[in-house]
Length: 50
Image 1 (spheres, helix red, strand yellow):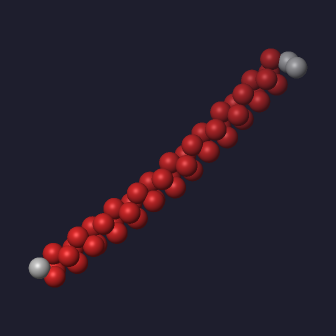
Image 2 (cartoon, rainbow, N blue to C red):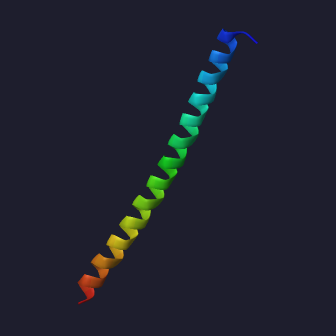
């Protein structure tokens, strides 16, 4: 295995890891955002009932 090949393999590994983490973070953010809006909506409707 040459140095160049291992370097390319390493960059591909880093890139795929980055994509994986980014997708996980995006999913987490979307979930939190949805949860936050749901909470906000229920609080809003609760205050409307007062």
